[in-house]
Length: 259
Image 1 (tube, rainbow, N blue to C red):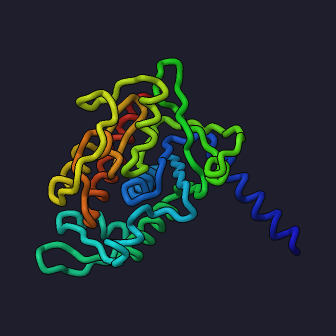
Image 2: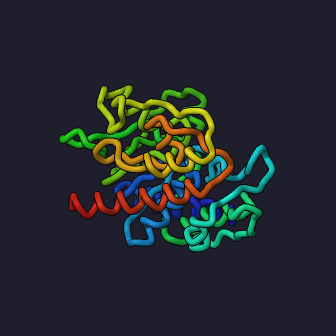
């Protein structure tokens, strides 16, 4: 019986891994914007891989504000939240108070139910280029391999678009510039870095700076702010959801354009 259990798990996972070697979209980071973008794209019939280096997707949404597991979502984002089956409770100033654990679980569930292939404990270590020097995939390895500094070669998976949803560090965009000396569609041509916290402007910047920053590479959420020099946001997640929704539409447009 023990061998049967192991066999079924191994066969199932490696079938999933093999099916993922070529996807329409690769999402790097399983925070709220990445999860929502992945779900929306998959619901339109595209294949999506989502890579999360940690054990659990969800990013910083799980912990709420200073580990008080409540967050706010603005009224004008309530329709997106309801589509993801996030429970909303009216607040005092036109916002909704949300249980951060329920909200995070709802976003993960939507992504899973839409057909997104989620790979946790896997880190995206690099990008791949095509002959036109456009991003066309990601380089992956087990997170413990990289954390331990082990010299183990990675694998590669192809994608027509890659989304950097790694949060504050904007790791994929930063590595693209560092390794290849390319210019991004930012005022400096590089990763500017996020500014200090401003709740109102941070929400605006998160959405405003979301989009394609290099052929084939998109940013969303706090990665968008970090790349373009936007303000850091507080424990309000409407901008994250709007960013995920916006970037999903832009990625779909790119795929349709290049096909």
